[in-house]
Amino acid sequence: RKEVEQDPGPFNVPEGATVAFNCTYSNSASQSFFWYRQDCRKEPKLLMSVYSSGNEDGRFTAQLNRASQYISLLIRDSKLSDSATYLCVVWVGGYQKVTFGTGTKLQVIP
Amino acid sequence: SQTIHQWPATLVQPVGSPLSLECTVEGTSNPNLYWYRQAAGRGLQLLFYSVGIGQISSEVPQNLSASRPQDRQFILSSKKLLLSDSGFYLCAWSVGTSGAYNEQFFGPGTRLTVL
Image 1 (cartoon, helix red, strand yellow):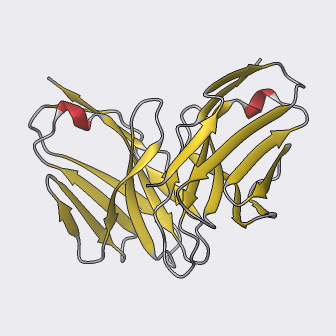
Image 2 (image 1 turned 45 degrees about the horizontal axis):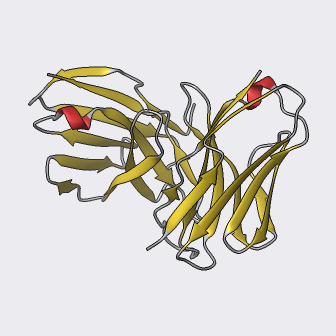
């Protein structure tokens, strides 16, 4: 089983739609979780951290389910500019080594 | 503010040729430095990380090597490239502390094609 698994998509959604991605992780000792965004042929950038209690940043909501070992990202009122690949990232502790998922591609359609 | 530079941006090399990719960070001291590779349709694979000058940890056995000759300089090398070395190479840095995850900031990357 991969350490971090994501549905590669693509998710094609109309503008204004709500879309959700899940990411599963295999190591129950994982401590921290993040979502990164990667635009086509660009470097990844941190979108948001994922806290146990769930957290929201504008139209973006991240959730963590430790019992089922997955994290989720919800995007409301999708914009064309949200089109990108969303990478799930998991940190198991120690030095700054993290595991990146392969990413979920989102395409927001006019 | 901190910035991270990588060069070259694009590289096409024949199989068996050497490789040298350079990464430099400005505006911070004693950062952790990382080299990742992203192959087409695959996730980011950590190749090397460094917590200080001359300190290199290798994550994946391969024909690549890394060096950190200066605090804010990280170099990825190969003596003989393989076709499977093609990919998008990303350098990243983070604040150099342990105990908690510190955001990694990525450079613009080098797109390497081995023919």
